[in-house]
Length: 232
Length: 248
Image 1 (cartoon, rainbow over the protein chains, first blue to last red):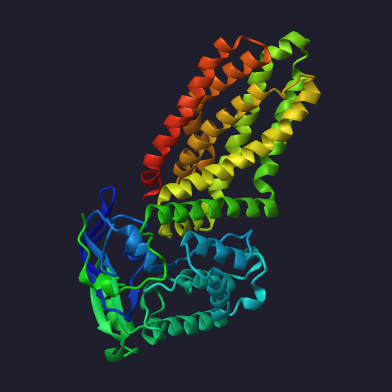
Image 2 (image 1 turned 90 degrees about the vertical axis):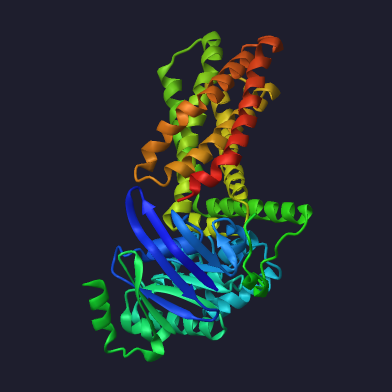
């Protein structure tokens, strides 16, 4: 579903990604770990077609980036640190707006379903700026899954959430994975990554330094592996 | 042409791929109107953008009114200048705010992730900004008329104001989407905008002065033609470069 070959990204003269290779099969849930500055967000922005690679090949859902970005975007849902939502619109209005941008059929029914999935149906007419951080993140997920994308990219979705909101987000992520969607999630939370993902990759110094199946991984040994790979 | 991987055949996205020109145009217009509508609804709730533009415009007009003790003849000569100074500076406030709203919560990324031609995003923002500017102008014209005792409700002048506002927002929206990426965006926009938009402002001031002072149409028409030409050129340039401006 995702194929990346010899990906290089430079900002000016500074290389951030240095010949990265990455493969994700359909229905796989990959947690991407790595220290600050390893290039996780940059990599995710390239996969999301928001940033162009300096060199290398990126294929998503059979389409090549950046040449076929329009087709890739139809198959992508993205949740980042920021909610990508308008504070002066209600939750329902935000989803209707994004639905129109995607030219979705049966938009009203989709919006209602999305709000129910993330448990915000009863608060659908509240302005988003009145929402807590956790509620905004749940609405961001509803926005990302509104067009039922094949591939979902999550950039540290648990950042700033309390325990309860994180647990709710986890259950939504499990539901998405159970529906056979392909997920790539960046995170700093090692235990949560092992718990949620089917594979854990560690990004260090601009390349994938380790890639382990979550079923073969001993959660107790992950911090040790992480330290040895990232030299933290 | 880029080759598509065989795996692409198994992907059945619910997002329709427009197959005909008619469907493409419909999808384009749907995205464009969604942005305009979103901007209008958000502004109706917050009143941040029009409020700031209006207060600034009123202050400028009032200061000129008290600073310049003018006879009727002199008023006719300075009116166009005062009007366009007011509109252009108030417009800068609006342009900055309009793009900041998109940038602050990452909404610009949300727009760029949508599978629409990016020019639809640009023209949606231009239309929204133009509507806000016209609302401020519609309030300022009668205010100015009362304070300065000058009749501004002349069809020719209204056409010039519309053409000037189109040129201003077309360039302003493009440059504000560039400036918003910078940390110093509030001061960067006027520095970038005014040199580029100067031909529009000069043409608008000259044409407005001609109309207010009752010049012959033969004298006014070249300035109006220049305004139209600049509007068309800037719309074409912005259409071509917006994708590169918002690209990382």
